[in-house]
Length: 189
Image (cartoon, rainbow, N blue to C red):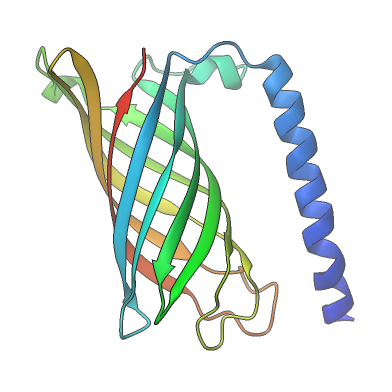
């Protein structure tokens, strides 16, 4: 029974995400910022670790554009989509779609430096599995600190995050992967 539930869960979840993404695409206003990102990181659990790198796109929205309730001005909603490679004894591919609540720490900002904290989750597909992982489609919660800064007439950002991959016990084998991720990028606008 549990295996049958798992087999049906992923297609239903993906169909729901596609529907929600399509609905969101029609209802969202233009993002405040869009940009390019590069993530690099290394797993620390399970041992021995493996490295990975991703490239992707980011969109930053005012929180109230997404959710119809009042929110503090420093609160933003961030979407990220990325593709990457991992070196798990050979090069393997993965892709991820994540959403974050991002909160600017305005009390610490200067004219050219604006720190923030962020946390979120998403879905990640790994073209590989560590021993005991069970599924290739997994959840991807993350949390970190970062900052935006002005340099060479462009707005850049960087962040340091904890990064987790697991299937949330949807499969009997749920060996997670824990990593540290470093992100850099810039905004187009």
